[in-house]
Amino acid sequence: MITTDVKLKMSDLRSGIKPIWCPGCGDFGVLSSVFRTVIDLKLDPSHVAIVSGIGCSGRFPAFVNAYGFHGVHGRALPLATGVKLANPDLTVFVVGGDGDAFSIGAGHLPHAARRNVNLTYVVMDNSIYGLTKGQPSATSPMDVAVDSMVNKKGRRKGMAGLLNMAQANAPVNPIAMALSYGASFVARGFSGRPKELNALLKEAVLHKGFSFVQVISPCTTFYDTYDFWREFSEPLPEDHDPSDKVLAYERALDLERGYIGLFYQEERPSFEDQVSKLVAEPTDAFAPTAVGDLLSKFRR
Ligand SMILES: Cc1ncc(C[n+]2csc(CCOP(=O)(O)OP(=O)(O)O)c2C)c(N)n1
Ligand code: SF4
Image (cartoon, rainbow, N blue to C red):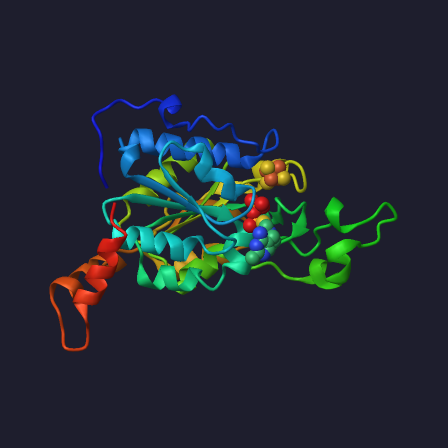
């Protein structure tokens, strides 16, 4: 993490490209919180990289005055792993939607988590596919009925009609998933509670390892859950112990409560530290020169 003595303002971090998100979209709040995090931690923007997949949320890197990579749908984590491995001094944020993270990209989450790649993964969870106009996603509740799914007579139409089971699918539990996959920092925030979100993102960046932050980020156009989450969200109990994984599971599985806060945190070596060690201390079973040479091609 490289910091700067220059006192940054929000305007220093805006790229000049105006976000084209719909009015009130939760992603605005997440963008502000990332700016706040960079300012509060005095991160040098020339040592920050933001990597995304595809979606409304995937447009994020374009709005930030830092390095950015708008990748393909669901592939942000492997891209970001490469960025971090080649340039470990960069602070790397990975951003995207619940479709990007838990559907098409779901196969990457376990591996980034178990490897403990030192990334801050911010999943902007609106429980819907925003960019493609409101299909249900892996985090949509079972009873969701959004405009894109039903015609005026209340019958399912389009893709949702074809995939008639869409409303009959139980949602995944992102916090329990991240815990099972071995993420070393697991948290949930809500874009409607910016103070708590700012605090969480700062902790996530400071954590040396894979930080998974599910941010409830409502889609005001296709599935506006602001009122629900304002009512439903509550901080984890004051006595919550983030080193207790069983307790973290218990609270993740308690669907009667919309807990926000840090569920779990553990310290263990990061992926890039492990790889650097292997490169520096060759073993018979490992060809460090080839890896070192490869990584050096992608250095800034
Ligand atoms: C390989 C591939 N498959 C499908 C798509 C179409 N597509 C674009 S965005 C998207 C889902 C968007 O939902 P989400 O990831 O939750 O992001 P949001 O738009 O809600 O922020 C889909 C299915 C694509 N661009 N590329
Ligand atoms: S469609 Fe939804 S997720 Fe996409 S910009 Fe609009 S409000 Fe945000």
